[in-house]
Image (cartoon, rainbow, N blue to C red; front, side):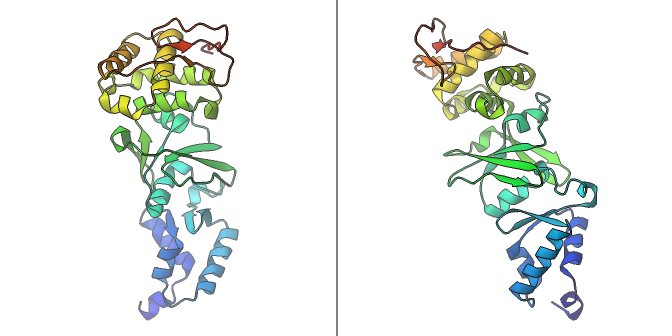
Amino acid sequence: MDNNSEKLKVEDWINEQISRGKYGFSREMLESAFPVRSPNALKHSLSRLSRKGKIVSVHQDYYVIVSPEYASRGILPPALFVDGLMKNLNRPYYAGLLNAAAFYGAAHQSPQEFFVFTNFPAMRPARKKGVRINYISKATIPENLLEDRKTETGYLKISSAELTAADIVQFHKRIGGLNRAAVVLEELAEAINIEKINREFIEETQTSVIQRLGYLLETVVGLEEIPEKLYRCAQDLQIKFFPVPLNAAGKIRGFSAVNRWKVIDNAEVELD
C-alpha cells in the first residue's frame, strides 16, 4: 500500500466499494485493505460508521453498505445482500417461500421477513433495522432446482417454481397456514413447468409433501394437469403413499383419506 492509500479513510474505501457495485464486505476484507491499521483502529472506524448508518453488521463480521437510496430504511433489502453474505460464509443457499414466490408474481413479498434456505449447521435468525432474516436448514441444497435472478447488486439464488410450491406446503406454518399456502399455490401454478415435475424433483421432495402438494393442487386449487403429472411421476418411481394428515398438528380420528393421495382431510382449506 502506497503513502496515498495509507491515508485513505475507511469511509472512502466503503464509498469506493459502492462505486464498484459492491454492497458488502467482511472484516477480513477490510483488514486486507488496511494492513497497516491496528485492529482496534479498524474496530473504531466500523463502530463510527455503524452509528452514522453507513454500514450494518448482518452476521458476525460481515457488513452491508447502506447506499444513499436506502439510507431512510437504514439497510438494504435482503434480496440485495444475501448472496454476498452466503458467498462470504461459503454456504449454499436459496431464497424461498414467499420471497421466491414474489419473483414469479405469485405472492407479495413481505419486507419484514426474508427466508433463506441453507445447509447445516443451523444459522440463527437475525433482525436488523426492522428486517428479519430467517434461516431454514436442509441436509442438502438442490442446486439443480434453483434459479439465478438479477438484482440491483448482482444475483440472487431462488427456488424454482416447482421447489417453491413444495416448500410452501412443507413450511406452510411459516407463511401463515394452509389457507395462505393454497392461495400462493393458485397464483404460482402458471409459473410451474410441468416438464420439471420429474425424477429430480420427486427425489428431492419428501413423500408426505408430494401427497399434500398434489392433494391441494387437485382438490383445493382445482388443477388437473400438474397434479396428474405429479401423481404419475411418483407412481413411475414406485413411491408408496401412506395415509398422512393434511394438517400434521390436527386430529385425525373421524376424518376420511379416501383419495388417491391418501391425505387425511382433517383441515378446511379455502381460497380466500
